[in-house]
Length: 136
Image 1 (cartoon, one colour):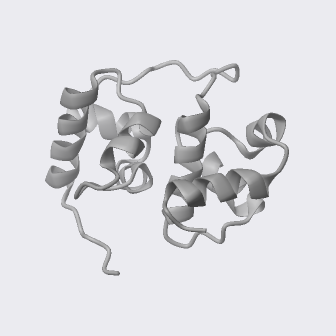
Image 2 (spheres, rainbow, N blue to C red; image 1 turned 90 degrees about the vertical axis):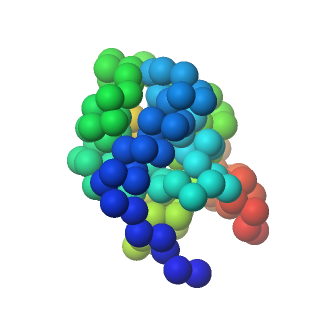
Image 3 (cartoon, helix red, strand yellow; image 1 turned 90 degrees about the horizontal axis):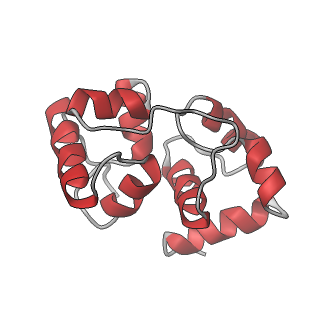
């Protein structure tokens, strides 16, 4: 499968479209769910291109939640969506250690430690993310 290429202008337009449909502030998790099945980039690509989720949204003029707290709570669907985004990211090995390293480079995603506290095993989280993507 060929990976589509997006210009910065394409990425900004899709972020703006998602915000118009979903409302603001726009989270990476809600955008990830929105972009599936559309000709839109993953949150991971936006983060790589613009340096952070907040940076991508700022470029598009879209509001984000500016607070970053260790007590932040993500819904189950958001966490699974973010893990699915990680699994789709180029170079992903699918290992817990690789997810933890990836999460450190992202803005607004739960750390590996947070996943360990919240779920009984990495394999369960990974399996749920793969099911979300229609893979087994």
